[in-house]
Each structure stands twice: as C-alpha cells, then as structure tokens.
Length: 536
Image (tube, rainbow, N blue to C red; front, side, top):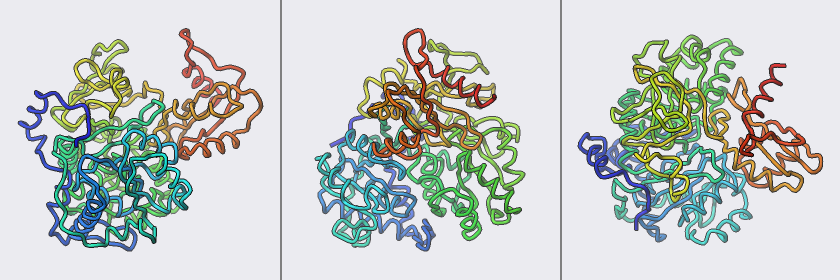
C-alpha cells in the first residue's frame, strides 16, 4: 500500500539522482547510522538520551506499533510538543513506513479534525498535557468520528494507552518496513491561505537532501549543540538544518518548551549551546531581556543565531551581532520545499538586508508578474520555484494544485520577492490572503468561515495590521445584526476549537465591508484604514 502523491517527472528524478541529490536512503538512516554511538543526542529537561538509547527507544515503539497491526503505507496523526517523545515517535514511524502528520501543540479541535479527515489515520499519538486530551471527552468523540483510527497512544497516560510504556517495552526485532525512498515519508503542514489546512507530502529522498545540503551550508557537525525552542514539528526547527540536521551530524539537541529569554538563556549557559533558531518576535524579546538584565553573559557560547519564519528588519538584524554577540544567518523557506540561507561568509550588508539565496544549484527560482511572465532582475513579483526538494502538489488537492503550479511544474508560493544579480532574495510581502503573526501563519479564510458561524455575524473579513513586535497582527472586520464584544468573539472562536494564535487581536464592527469592482471584499482598503488610523 502506497500513499498517492504528485511525483516529479522522470527526467527530473533521473537528473536529481545523477547529481547525487537523491540517494535512495530512508529518513530513518539519519538515526540508524549512529545506532551504536554513545554520544548525547537529546536533552529534555533532566532526561538525556544517547544515540544508542534514542534508536533503541524508536525500535521499541516501532515493534510495539507493528504488534498492534500498523503497516507500511498507513498514516498517523501525531500531536506532541517539544519533548524527546516527538523524535522517538517520528523515527519509529519512519522505521515501519507509517507516514505521520505532525500537528503543532498549539493546534486545537478544528485543525486536528481537518488533518484526520484528509489522511484517515490509523494511529493517534497525543499528550494528556494538552487541554484537548486532559480527559476523554474530546478523545472519545474524535475516535468515534474518525473510524480509520485503530490505535491511540497518549503521553502522560498511566493506562493501556501509555506512550511511555510502548517506548520502554523492549520488543521483538523490528521488521524493517520503511517505505521506498521515492515514496511519501511524512506530511508537512502548509501555512497556506485557504480555509482548509493543506498537507504537503515529503518523500525520503527530497527531505533527506534538504537536510544534508542545509548542514553543508550551516556547518553543522558533531560539535553542534542546538537549542530547539520553536515548535519541534515546524519545518524550520526540524530540517533547516534543525534537529534532523543535528542528528545527521551526530550533534546534540536541547529542547525548550518555548523561546522565552527566561527559559532559554539559562539553558544556553548550562548546556553550552552554540546554535539556535528564532522568529523575529522572539529576537525582539531576547534583545529586550539583554537590555533589562544589563548582560548577555549567559549567551557567551552562542556562535550562530538563525532567524526566519517572517521577515527580519535590517535594524533588528544589525543589533544581533552587536547585542547578542553572535553571527546572524537569515533563513527564508517554506514547508513546500525551497530554502534560502545567507551564507556564513557573506558580507554584513548582505546578511542584514537579504533573506539569502537558494541552497541547491538545481533550485530554479524566478519572479513572475500578475500574468505569469518573467520580470527582470530587481523587480518585485511572485516567487516561482521548482527543484529537487520542492514538492509537485498538495495531498489530494487537484483543484488547488491547478492554481498553485504553472504548466511547467513551477510552484507559486504567494510570496512577493525581488532577486538581485547574485541570486539573493529580499522578501517584500505576500500575495496570498495569509497573516504571518510572529511566524505563525493564519489563513484568513479559515478564521472568516468560523466567524460566520456566529449567529450575530453577517459578514467577516480578517486582515493583517502591522505590529512592531510580531510583524503582523490580525484584525477582524465584522458586519453584525446585533452588537458583539471582542471578548465574546474570541470566546466563540475558542469554542470552535481553533488555535489561540488565530484569534483576532482586534475586532471592528462596521456597517458594510468595502468591495472591489468584481464584488470581492477589498482587503487592501481595510488594511489602508488600519494603517491610517495607526498614523493618526
């Protein structure tokens, strides 16, 4: 049984193999190649796991899941936070050929149901520490609703469904069942702008190449001590080079529950962390903490700070080496594939003012105008890309794929960019209806659809507004049949089971929404109103 997905055309697959990008190895090789190593792999609070122990834990869980009847070609829905079990589960599933969707810990009922409807999982792995799973109310309903579910494992669960027990129990030898390297290994989450969260099939070949190449550019090796403070399931701290890059290089990953300075600074000092990755709002908070505490001494071991997820201002960029005391590397990538890095030997001007250049010689990137025609160097337009680790289609989304790709297989990300003569990219904004709230992507349509369920709301439009800390916040413009308060709207959305970061930061009730000539809501006009008001 294989998972259907849009494959690369044969001539591209052949070229990527010939050039050594695709090596036909399973992603589990990242761990199994170090299976006999006693070097430290993961630090999670007081827990420390060597590579040998991490591999054994993954083997135990894999054997346990096989014993429960899970087979290659099936799927799993996993929701774990920044804990060692996240990596154990990920590698266990890779070993038995089960493709997971790794939901973020911030996701709630709405997102989990949307993912389950798409992949029809045989397995659910979750955590009692999450509010949805603190009792069995949601869980029972979820299992009932999604009849494909046969196995449930829960972290911090004392009973028969205990994830920890399945990991601790030495199993029979795992029957190696990894899917072929050119098949789907797992699904990434798209931060897309459409109402239903879309899934990105990633193959072993394309993802492994992305990690290997990232390591080469970022110089990750066995001395790398990486602090994972962003959500572990996010593409950026997972593979750019992220935790998987660290594991490939036989370095050490230290887990933090969140990127706050109060939590991270002591961890950096204690474990002599030399690399971490942040989004711009977290950088602002770190700089603020250094200013307030009057010292960056705890960060003395840090040599490289990666910043991505949202555009970093040049002003903020320049402060990083001066105040944090380490090198900055800008990262601009997408779960769909393409990753750009500033290089470690780039000039300060380039590091501060651009979002880097593509990492692969075979990343094809160009800029299109509104009609799909190429624009000259330096002009702003739509990013178009294809390459050895950029996907060729969303999972089971033929309609969306028809508009997201051109006839030559180039993916249109919705980002507005300019490319200079040296191939370096500056991100100018987004074409898609998406709000980037501190690196968390909000699909406006998704929230609007949920708002319209409220009995008093007639029309709804969610738009971005500039914010000095988060880059963007969200404002909901509502046409209502009776007065509603912002607190009531947020409570209503929480009841719909939506992630906290998607709740509107501001609510404005208006008599009518402005429309474009073709009758669509004129969001440009709404954003303009907000900008004018903030300047007034």
